Length: 177
Length: 221
Image (cartoon, rainbow over all chains, first blue to last red):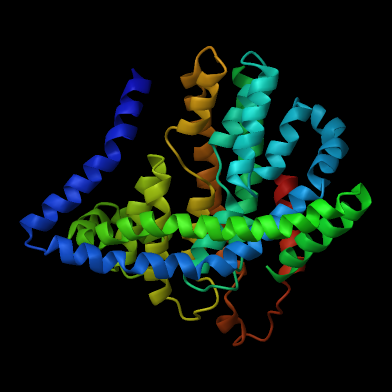
């Protein structure tokens, strides 16, 4: 029941928003076609503006992933994390999740396929991937788009939230499964 | 950010050299740079679409209505932003898009919100409190249904894929609320530079502060 309601909302949210915006525009006599194209012009400029910030972040993170240090950190921390009932397979996900969304999804998919549906690691990594965001990417894109160079505490808060979400995921999963 | 950028790159090169993966690290520069441009260019079309839609929504007063609906919440979270600013409406729209997992719409609308927040920012190169709060809300990744994850679980024949919705929702809500609280706490101590220059007692020590806060946070967990 809950799932079908959620599916319905996911499916209809976008079409509903679009119809709502266009209908209300017509009712209020907004020249929707002209206003749309006028607003859309900005799309190119914004996308090009974020390129330098994306290059800085994505190149640095690609280099980090290629260096093999993430696997190394995983091996180092595995005994420590075993104390908290965190399987070693999960460690790459914990490290990669704030850095790269597609990479985290790739690792999750890999864990799911190799360990199978009945493994605790599959469930835990599913919750971890589903419950957080790619902090570095968001910071680069959002701050990049408006030319902010001093992030102040934004990155720290983002990373702390990631740490909290990992702790919460482990606690909740330990409790439920 | 300067130190993090330096740290990420230098540590990668050193680790790459030790692991004998230096060629991979050097190749990653090229592939990473290429990927960044691909990501940016893939955004152009969808960004244009949603910026166009948002402009209609703004002109017909829809954003204003949404902004009024969530005013009790935003008034507290974004107390530096005037209540009637279009930024509030954009923030609300971006949050809804995120909650429903509409990533394609969420990024352009979020950027639009950042542009509105930038208009209220006193120092255009440094993040304002409101921006940090908005980013905190975004990086916590509040989402009602993790659709991609469920799709993968269905793919491997997971017994009851939707059973992960409840724990995920709980975890993401905890992270989301913590991020907001943390942002509120940090904004008291971590003043923007233009204010700092007026109070000479405060010295800028981003790195020391950062590790200091981090430790105390981990201790309390």
